[in-house]
Amino acid sequence: MLDVAAVRAQFPALASGTAFFDNPGGTQVPRRVPEAMARYLLESNANHGGAFETSRRSDAALAEARGAFAAFLGAASSDEIVFGPNMTTLTFHVARSLARTLQPGDEVVVTRLDHDANVAPWLGIAQERGARVRWVDVSVPGCAWSPADLAAVLSSRTRIVAVGLASNAVGTVNPVREAARLAREAGALTYVDAVHWAPHGPTDVAELGCDFLACSAYKFFGPHLGILWGKAEHLERLTAEKVRPSPSEPPDKWETGTPSFEAIAGARAALDYLAWIGATFGEPAARGAGGLRGDLAAGMAAIRAHEKGLSRALLEGLTAIKGLDLRGSSDPAGLDGRVPTFAFTLEGISPRDVCERLDREGVAAWDGNYYALALMERLGLEGKGGMVRVGAVHYNDLADVERLLSALRSFAR
Image (cartoon, rainbow, N blue to C red; front, top):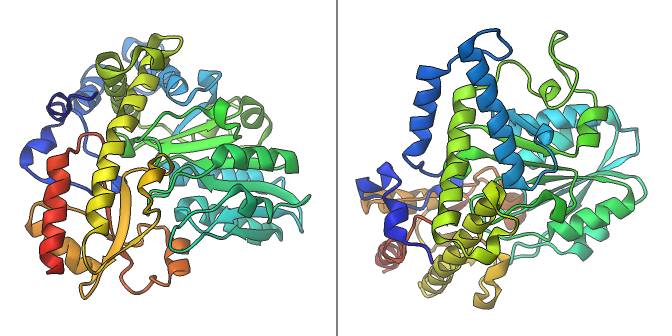
């Protein structure tokens, strides 16, 4: 079990006394992350490929980070890891390349549950290339889709299937492995948004069977940096938009301009932190083959186990508040199918007002649509203030949960 006090001691921001439930919009960082960024800037700050010491150090740091993220995501090679400003930018980049492969009448599939970063790029290239967009609908109020829902929109003309591992709005964990299998059988590529899942549990691209997967380090205790994994065969054959002098081989051809080396160093340190959790609190059986990949897997498994307790407490507490309308799964037996992210409205109080009142109680939470635009439209809440969203991560504890619930109960009264 996690020693939450030891975990919280790693995060300077938690000393402020704020109960952070704004985590789906970006987590706090352990001390080692800014220290690694500062160390890079002070000791190794140079562009890559130079014939001098600081450039060699910068190159080494980049190579180490690629290897660490290959371990984090279960990639076969560090050459399958691409860095960029954020997941959104990387997704637009890949979409522009995949657009070249589309013909009029081809089909792309998106879901009404996803963050718009995994919707808008595909809508754009479909419009440009004369392709058809097929939508996977979601249940209401459960906010979930099934493999059968996806299968119903697939055809011999499907070329791209874009799905999310977990909903950034309501916490639903989606059947992505089954989705990738169905897409593969239809002859389509699968692009997975793992941004919201990455802080909450292990990610293994080989097990998922997808073709691309993207996430963002600032959602799992690091700085602002996007990470893309792509199968080597796709990264090699697809045409990347780039400047002419840059390399023509992956992963470099996908990294437009000079990367943020300091952010890459900080993201590497975030993985060191997650590996520390695995080495300190993880179950030996979860380490598998050992090494960094084993420690990361054990760390994420320990996080997942701890967060189930937070999910249970949040679910029980929120559903007991009079006038609170929770969207997403409310089944206490279904905690494996969600992460501790919850969205709701409170009768008689706008979502913004709820969050402002929570702020006065020292609790940080989000309101609005959090870029899950299609879901808010499906729920009829877009343009009406959206919902309140609270999301826990492993540095939250039951005291944080009770503080949140106590404040909400007082508002409801």
